[in-house]
Length: 633
Image (cartoon, rainbow, N blue to C red; front, side, top):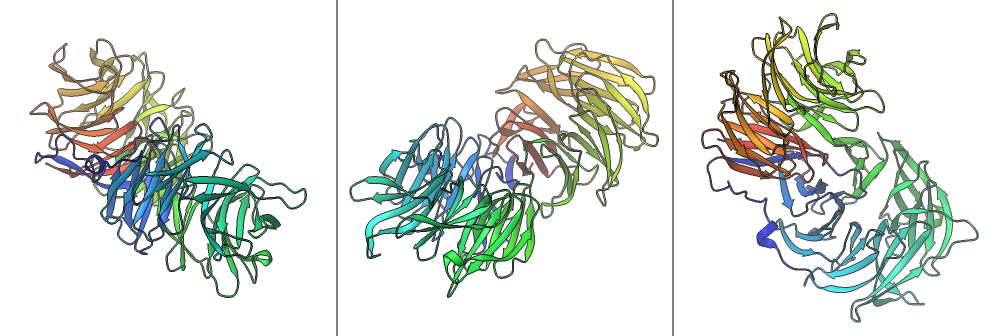
């Protein structure tokens, strides 16, 4: 049964440290679940959008990037999202063990109901045309369809999934009789594989039955997306072969196929038009096409534009003037339906994020390394992507460091690359800098050399001018997880999965000190301003304080999770930390306790860093999200 959890999940969750003066607060989320279809929608009020980032639903202002509301409730990727026709409700479904469907009240920005009936994952959600009912189709492994009452939160009925799998569902008003008069039964169309089915929902009896659409002749297609005509007399279905099937609802037979694009049709939207039919089509080849004609069977291509990747989401504004379109590359476009004039609205990362670093001394610019193969420079003033620097195909950046002039990135294929921070131009690269991949990169403060660490435990120093290897330090026996250069550029410190914390004299090219954890590898380190106190965390699930002049740790504090990253605040009073627990925590170095927690990620967090002015924290993770937190000391 659906039940109410308003108190638990309504507003952004206050952590245990919320009542304290010290806190972090989620300011902005950069991301979008572009791996799933129809994940970004116009709000019917025309001023806002609704999208999913990881396991969070975000309601944002189209004109003000600083205004976002975060709806927490899921613990894994949100796979489908639907907004009601009146804009009062939204529904989201997730994958994973807790494959819940959550119904949100968008006016009060709180959770109404959480439906926990389905397992494995939700593939499609759709509101009825009057928003009274919510249709929820599970994944093929769940193999069930549920219909919920949006007012009472009760289950109206359920049935076996058909077609299996169901990858698109649209609402089609009421079922009509032979004289084309409305009956009391609601109508939904669903497609998947080579099947289109029309569901008849009798809410009075609590019954639903699927009716299959017939093929015309011997032509068969695999269907990917659906859209009803404005009068519900025709149904359009996109196919993997790039054409649109037109179905006459009177006899429920495919009338004809209209070629449209290559790469398959990913999205369909019917645009109301006087005296004819207009259809917006999103293609797997990155094209957006308008088909128009006097009747549904006579529509032909009117206009077409090509964007930067397959179109994963397409939403029509309430005034029917604009389309909000999102590509698989993470770019959101605003498009005019009249002439397909395109404007980039924003850009996000479309893959897992592995590293984040601020440009040295600049609190407005930070960089991320993404599994989609891009190093991106973000402007913290409006969260726009100033630069997107691609590494070569089939590899991705894993570590990055930058000054205001250049950025240096290390890749999983062992290359080091440098780009110009003004234009994003590729300046140089070093092949095979580290066998197995680069894990950490740091720039000297005088910009004369680069220090890099690799998978096989090697530390290497590279001359900036000649790009020659100046030094090779190889005492670590396992993967180096982080390196830091001391402010005078003479000394460095490194930690590794071999449990060792080593300091180095870079001029003499020798090790100075060695400290070792008892059992687990070290994932991260932070060096205090006095340059003798070092903080480490890792596989042992503990935070360790070291004095480099002493052999044993000064103090050890147990943690609830494996910490992947720590960052010291510029004033030296706090540590930001994050890891497998999906929570960003602030650790007070005077109280030796967690004083604030930030909930927002839905996959392990890979990296966290303070801004140079100490006012913000940025965290990135495997949920494709970069979260910017305001830090209040």
